[in-house]
Length: 427
Image (cartoon, rainbow, N blue to C red; front, side):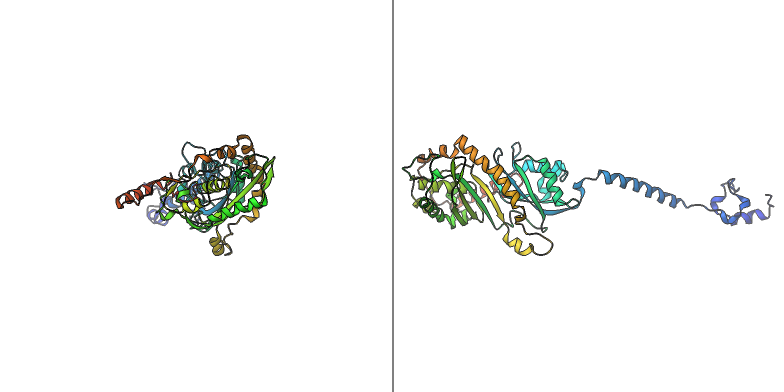
């Protein structure tokens, strides 16, 4: 199309800038005969926006496949678990040792509920046990508080963790809790039990043999001795490294009684149940040992009352085999939050069948079989006469300087590898 010199500048001013080349000529691809109304061009920013949107879509689709469950928003939860403590060096994690916590954390990591960093540093997920259990001690209902992801149901979490655990540890259930819940600090009381052969309470003149069967009168005497522990007393003689003038040595025992005997594989057993606000290292095992020593005539019940005093007495420690954590109580928490419509009470009554089955098939048989083959209680009782049940070291009131040094040492030693207090429930 021929365009005169006069009309050319006017025409160019009417066209969009992108339609005109740098030299002032029309772009060759412009359909001149088609009319000006069909000529259009995208702004460069629009092209950039489209490219960014496509890239973001590709990245999002890829990340949906790679996103780990540990990236989801985490909330505070309570985990109920049961385990057979035989073969473990206790509940608390200890580098290089086989512990319940180590197996649990590694199982959660393999189930992709925790990252490896979280597994290595459990304090990052606010991990806290309700009670420590010592070497060989089992638990029927141990509670752990921690933060877990919310993009997976609690039932699925329980199933996935149990797949990664051995048969001696089972997760019973997981429940959402309040943000500030702490399994140790929110606990009102703890119930422990100790299973032992009934011959441990036989009369002094009666041989301790598997054939022994306890009488109703003898069982009543056992319960009378155990009742002396009830109430608030100074238990510094029933633990290690605790001084009589320390306030933390005072403990409140709610119940302490022995149940009716039951028979397993030719042996008669008794179960002592103790409920208290908290317990110290070896406390229950020493309480049981003292009761056995009194019933066997090695000492008198006056030794128990003397043990409340400042003197440091020689008291034996009963075997760990029969000790187990039965239940952790959260009565105040349940009253305040259990019925608020958002949280469930931490009672686990709906899981009683599972708990009872595990206890019957994994904990009781271990105690019975080990007692039969290793005779741990019988062998331990042979050394009862070697203890004096008398003053082990003279007690003198500490000087101010010595007391300050002791308090400083206690402050350093009263924490575990994660910086948590180990003062309570180090059984």
